[in-house]
Image (cartoon, rainbow, N blue to C red; front, side, top):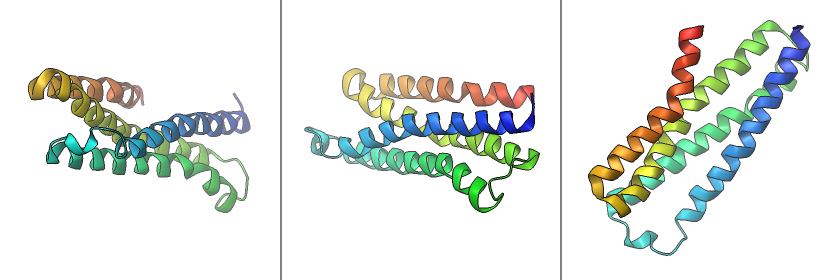
Amino acid sequence: MELSKKVKIALDETRMLILGAQILLGFQFRGAFSDGFDQLPTDARYLAGLALGLMVCVVGLLIAPGPYHRIVEGGADSGHFHRVVTVIAELALLPFALALGLDIFITASRIFGEFGGAGAGTAAAVLANRDRSARARRA
């Protein structure tokens, strides 16, 4: 496949990822204003704030390739830029997985208790980060 097509696909994929991340970021912000948030234990509220911060990092990482392409590369396609987009997308997976795991821990611990919540949150984070590990082995 030619380089310009690879770069276009990489940018399109990051745009799709940012749409999903924006939705999850909106849920994160909305959570603090929902009924029952003030009834959460203090540590769960801090974890929710940490998950929000991680999701803000994800959104920031996923937004970065577009402006980088225009400002730094001048809109030109290069192998270096394709690698930058790929690395940034892979870097965004870790904070995404951690934020998802924390959110599921908070929710599941209200239903199943602390141990059940820890198991569910850990499983979600590991499964969300599984793609990152598989990509690293292929590279």
